[in-house]
Image (tube, rainbow over all chains, first blue to last red; front, top):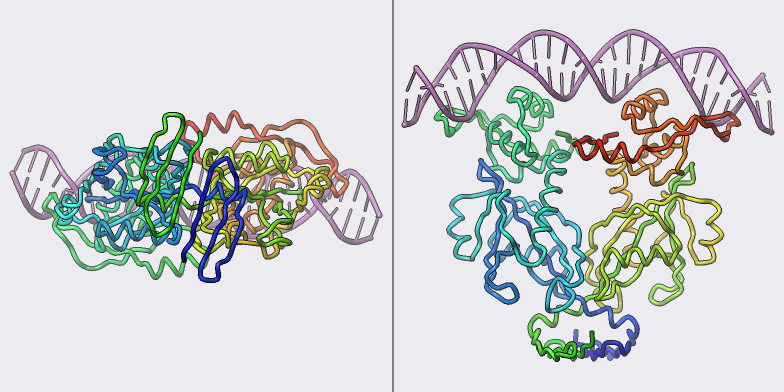
Amino acid sequence: MFYFIIIISNIKFALILRDRESIVMERKDIEEYFNIALATSVVVFGFDLDDLHILLKYNTEAPFKGAYILPSKYIKPETSIDLTVKKILNSIEVEDAYIEQLNASGKVFRNPLGRVVNIGHYGLIRFDPKETAKFEKMGLKWFRYDEIPDLAYDHNQIIDFAKERLKRRVKRRPVGFNLLPEEFTIGQLQQLYEKALNKSFDKRNFRKKIFNSELLVDLDKSVETSSGKESKLYKFDEDKYAKMSSRGYDFLF
Amino acid sequence: MFYFIIIISNIKFALILRDRESIVMERKDIEEYFNIALATSVVVFGFDLDDLHILLKYNTEAPFKGAYILPSKYIKPETSIDLTVKKILNSIEVEDAYIEQLNASGKVFRNPLGRVVNIGHYGLIRFDPKETAKFEKMGLKWFRYDEIPDLAYDHNQIIDFAKERLKRRVKRRPVGFNLLPEEFTIGQLQQLYEKALNKSFDKRNFRKKIFNSELLVDLDKSVETSSGKESKLYKFDEDKYAKMSSRGYDFLF
DNA sequence: GCAAAAGTGTTGGGGATACACCCATGG
DNA sequence: CCATGGGTGTATCCCCAACACTTTTGC
């Protein structure tokens, strides 16, 4: 695609020449609208089996050089939103994330370069302590969920939004399993729920509730936990959930 | 604000002259991103005490002239998303709507004029049969919730999304009251819930559930309903809900 | 021996569901 | 007299919340 555009703002007209067929279109009044940039930011959540964390990037470019920001990217006119998000994740070598779109943030004078609308996302990944060094090389750092510094743009607001959304989702869908290792103990699961919902639960009741849903597979394996005691491992039965879900089952914590 | 931009795509540079101070900025690589248009569409729900309806507009302009569309508007670079939505609603003389933002739709080749990203919204309003004529003059028509025709762009998809969202919201927040008249009967409320959730409820159990929440005020008034019998009127106690909500109360149907 | 985490049952209450009949009215 | 919708009570069940002690291990 090749095109040539001249825009003089306040004078609402423009010609567009496109493709070999030299389509001449007058976008006229509409032309002035084609002057917005879209960006996406991703709030990547990780759970180190103790606390929830968010991945932030040290910003090396103007504007707001030196501040921490969310991993972000401009959306090219010829690239879809979803693909742009995937590119962000690829660029920080994150794979297999559970992604969900958040609201678009609407501030008009948010970016000195012009009108930029940010379409936020959040992603849940499996925290791997071995990757911390790799992240550090890319200028990325995990920050505790409740110790997020002041960020550039309105990224703090996007994080607040993501936290709220996560809280709601954790209650209604079994998204928490995307934050845990493939195989996990009930204690780890409970810890995650308590952090995400900022609430504590009775151990016995928590187990009953979880086992009632029958979505956990007993792996007949154990690991040694921090107390030195053995603890049984489970995994999440995704297929079963998919089946139940399509039959109208509603996970509710 | 005055600015002058020349863009030649594929040649990634541009100069911007802005304001009296003649700030010269090079957006360079970034410039190519400032070529997206944003639009908003609003899925306006109404409830005629019998069925849920959605307000559609007959499109008199190219592209997709002659098709029905959602009430929509381009977002100007200098106008916020929320304000644009309000302008849409003002233009169709709708006031006091409950509004919520939906996801941005991501298709790249959605609009022949260029990349347009649509930020959907849904609105809940009080259906007033007296306004139907007024709407008709503006090319607006109520369509039954489950009898939506094929629309231009991806507006059908936006509607599907809005319906799903409404279903979820109705369960968790007392948004349904935004669709009912100020004063309503329990029968009308039940009818609304049954339509929105596509489910039927036992009359006695429904009443118990609703009264348990203690969010309805008995108005000690009656109206004659379609069966010719008198029926008691209630209204929603917004203040009480606000108070309970801030104390962590979670409405759940 | 003590701190830390794993694991395990029972009880009571409240909300959800299932279910049937009478009444007033308009046609 | 019949169709329509308003209004009402009871029995059962299940889920939820509250609650305490034993065990293993590392320090």
